[in-house]
Length: 299
Ligand code: HEC
Ligand code: HEC
Ligand code: HEC
Ligand code: HEC
Ligand code: HEC
Ligand code: HEC
Ligand code: HEC
Ligand code: HEC
Ligand code: HEC
Ligand code: HEC
Ligand code: HEC
Ligand code: HEC
Image 1 (tube, helix red, strand yellow):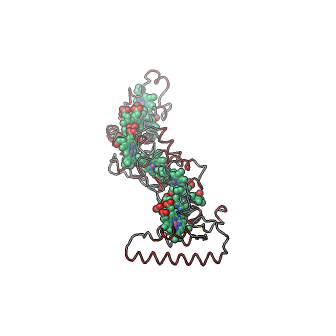
Image 2: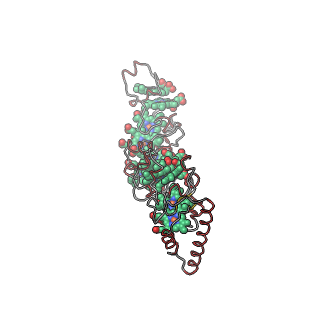
Image 3: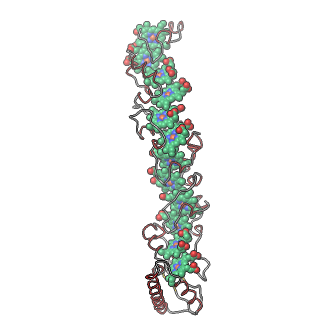
């Protein structure tokens, strides 16, 4: 992060006076901070609120000639909260930048006291959003996110795929905002927070095995899906097969209705040439003799 390397502090009052030697700056700084610290603690013992005192001091000192530099380590003397927050939750705002990389100037003279995010974050689509601080509510804890209201579009600056899935496969979930399900970032809800199960023995994993959550009507399933799951909605098919005494009894629903919901194969897909062509031309319907696949007759 070469661009931030050289900065160790800034001129508190933006005063450009004669050059002062470093040691003088240092002494003067320590002295001033001593005063401020004493004043503050004295007031604090009486009132438990931030005193007006330092402000007054700043105003007063600003009138006087001579600039001095404040280093990042010294901000804490008057601003105890931000350095603590940064230490606990600052992430890269602690490791990659310092206080005075963002706070280029200081009141009352400085006008660039609070930075725009775009000063350092530009280019990516995500950085073109409005209202950065509506989600990144504290710049000193940049990854402590809060989602308020209905949020979808901003998520797509990073999660294109999920956005496409939802848009290209209309379902009731398409009508929902992303954060109706993901109330916190990276938190995933359980289906049963909003739905009941088709059968008692299903769990979250089974729901996902049939329903891709962002396109829940595109139902697909694996070959080990129990027939009881299908029977929850297709009770007649299940009971006919359970009572059937032919070899179809031993086959699962998904063996014949492969992979994708509503797939139906014809008898020929599995029974090529069961009977001579002459017979089949005369009576083309298998059902005429065997009834249905579920209610199969062995003749
Ligand atoms: C001597 C005490 C003192 C020191 C040291 C000090 N500040 Fe301040 N700072 C204040 C006071 C008092 C205010 C409120 C001034 C005002 O509102 O006009 C303030 C205000 C601010 C603000 C708010 C600006 C705004 O527009 O809301 C920022 C940001 C800030 N300081 C950053 C820093 C940083 C960064 C450092 C260290 C590099 C630092 N300060 C060092 C006393 C200090
Ligand atoms: C990555 C940039 C960045 C860094 C690093 C940073 N700040 Fe800030 N600071 C901000 C922004 C932006 C604000 C405006 C309010 C907000 O978004 O939290 C702010 C606000 C402040 C305020 C005013 C608080 C208020 O409630 O108005 C103070 C004081 C302050 N910062 C001090 C510090 C100190 C001390 C450090 C170093 C320990 C520091 N900041 C590091 C960006 C930064
Ligand atoms: C002085 C430059 C500077 C400013 C101003 C600044 N940032 Fe950053 N920020 C950085 C750097 C450098 C990084 C680390 C590299 C990166 O992720 O791009 C970073 C990282 C982050 C991260 C990821 C933190 C992590 O630990 O992974 C977030 C989130 C972030 N910034 C949000 C913001 C927001 C929101 C603002 C405005 C309120 C802002 N930044 C203002 C310099 C800045
Ligand atoms: C709708 C909420 C939201 C808004 C608005 C928002 N962000 Fe973010 N931002 C996020 C989320 C979520 C992440 C991912 C955090 C994670 O990885 O844990 C993130 C990550 C980041 C990161 C670190 C990862 C990266 O890709 O760089 C930076 C920097 C950042 N945001 C800057 C900004 C800036 C600048 C703005 C305003 C222009 C902004 N964000 C607006 C939600 C938001
Ligand atoms: C700045 C980029 C960014 C933005 C904006 C963003 N995310 Fe993320 N999100 C990430 C990253 C990075 C991960 C981690 C991906 C990984 O581990 O592969 C993630 C992971 C997730 C996860 C996965 C959790 C898991 O266990 O797999 C969910 C859910 C998620 N984000 C939802 C959202 C929602 C909802 C929004 C909008 C409110 C959003 N994200 C906005 C960057 C972002
Ligand atoms: C109806 C609830 C619901 C809605 C609405 C929803 N999600 Fe999800 N999302 C989930 C669940 C549940 C998972 C976990 C899926 C899994 O583990 O297979 C998930 C997983 C994710 C993941 C992790 C990667 C993945 O695809 O499994 C991301 C990223 C994500 N969602 C982003 C979004 C975004 C962006 C939106 C809005 C466009 C959104 N989600 C809308 C419930 C939802
Ligand atoms: C935060 C609540 C919420 C969560 C979590 C959620 N859904 Fe939904 N889902 C809804 C709402 C609301 C509807 C529309 C009303 C209804 O059918 O109950 C819906 C509808 C559906 C539909 C019918 C879609 C249509 O267009 O007819 C399916 C299928 C579905 N959800 C499956 C799931 C699965 C599977 C999960 C977990 C992976 C899940 N949902 C998680 C709220 C949720
Ligand atoms: C064996 C596959 C399968 C499993 C496992 C499964 N579903 Fe379904 N689900 C379906 C099918 C098929 C539909 C009907 C889709 C249609 O109408 O096109 C459906 C419909 C739904 C609907 C729409 C309303 C309704 O009842 O018709 C919801 C909500 C739903 N499932 C939620 C869940 C939840 C929650 C779970 C996990 C407990 C789950 N599903 C597990 C296959 C499955
Ligand atoms: C939540 C209820 C539900 C579940 C669970 C369910 N289905 Fe369905 N299924 C339906 C609905 C609704 C239809 C459409 C009925 C209609 O169009 O009359 C349907 C239709 C079908 C059809 C007929 C397609 C056609 O063209 O006539 C087949 C085959 C089918 N399902 C097989 C299965 C299989 C196999 C399973 C288990 C993996 C399963 N279903 C699970 C609700 C469900
Ligand atoms: C041996 C293969 C086979 C098995 C096993 C099977 N089916 Fe079918 N199913 C078919 C065929 C073939 C049809 C088309 C109608 C016909 O000719 O019987 C069909 C039709 C259907 C239909 C639509 C017509 C109707 O009868 O409602 C549904 C729904 C259905 N099956 C569900 C199921 C379910 C649920 C199971 C498991 C309990 C199941 N099937 C097991 C082959 C099978
Ligand atoms: C997805 C493949 C599949 C489909 C579709 C299918 N079957 Fe079968 N069928 C089988 C299998 C496997 C057997 C058992 C073969 C064995 O064990 O030798 C079987 C056995 C049979 C038997 C002999 C039963 C017995 O107990 O001896 C008949 C008759 C039969 N099928 C007729 C049909 C008819 C009629 C249809 C269409 C309505 C049909 N099948 C659809 C796979 C299928
Ligand atoms: C005219 C009545 C008739 C029709 C139509 C008919 N079958 Fe059969 N099928 C029988 C009889 C009788 C048997 C038992 C005698 C035998 O083993 O040949 C049988 C046996 C079978 C067997 C089990 C024999 C074996 O090879 O293991 C299968 C599989 C079968 N039929 C499939 C079909 C299919 C598929 C169709 C439609 C293309 C069909 N049948 C149409 C009368 C019929």
